[in-house]
Image 1: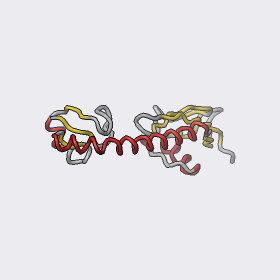
Image 2 (image 1 turned 180 degrees about the vertical axis):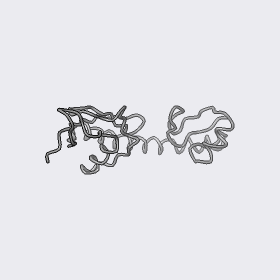
Image 3 (image 1 turned 120 degrees about the vertical axis):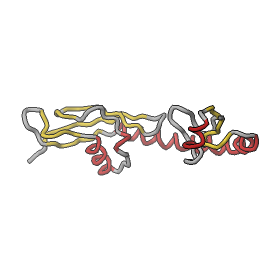
Length: 149
């Protein structure tokens, strides 16, 4: 079945794309969730009119995401943690800790956007990728320091 995507669907396409998918995937997931509409003559004609609006909206969103990425790239986040040995942490710095620290700085990022492979368990400087959108990923610098008691 051919459908027209209304929003970005990972590994499938971007808004306005006409893609061929299995019938069940279209009927049971894409169409009911409003992610796509069936690709018939009427919808194709309507989509051509909407394409310019969708592309303009997508460009505005991309610019907003790029601006956020630039701000995150310029930021160095300092996270104080308790230390056991010389540089081993009592606990670890997880994605949720990074999100909490970013909220204090005024950024709204979800835990799923922080692409931390494993929790940070030692002091030091780290670079953590933050996926802002499917096309835009920023690298955040994190400095883990000992907690001053």
